[in-house]
Length: 210
Image 1 (cartoon, rainbow, N blue to C red):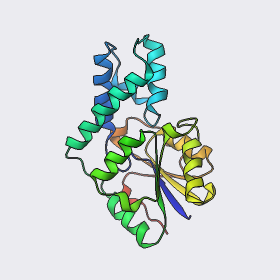
Image 2 (spheres, helix red, strand yellow; image 1 turned 60 degrees about the horizontal axis):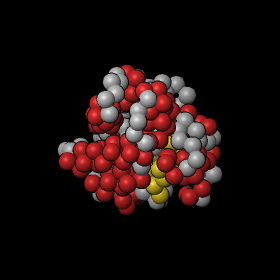
Image 3 (cartoon, one colour; image 1 turned 45 degrees about the vertical axis):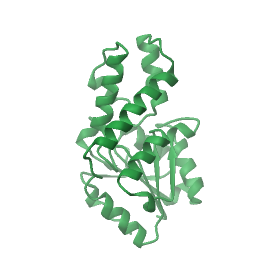
């Protein structure tokens, strides 16, 4: 193992409840009544994928760009104002990787500006060699594109990378990229099927990188 690639939402920060709240608010503002259970199936996917599907199903008149822009600005404001801290064990794991000269990167379905808000808020910039957004590649998770692109930027073969994911879509993406994957059971990420992961942990503190 030569690199560790982190999903962000639900792995670095426990932001899935905020995303769910923002998604429900966005849908409400668009006069669209959608359940929490229905939204859970989109965990780990890009905004473009999620809102394209919802727009088509619920016949929403706004453009995808307008919906996403509106939603992302709400989410950024909530994160900035929140008292969230990184998930327990994340800072320690990142410090351990840095001490061992093992590069770390973020491969998230969130937009780059949202990822950068999170990384800056928690002063994690120095720990990540690269940040890649799912909106910067052709296909979002569960397609492997974002993980393959991150491996390219790191200059490390996918087989030598390990991914930490909390969603079914993310695990499928990592495995499709021929990477090892640790599934993190985050209860706030909904009822996610992590069975395709190579290992499953209930706490980030359980992860030991050697």
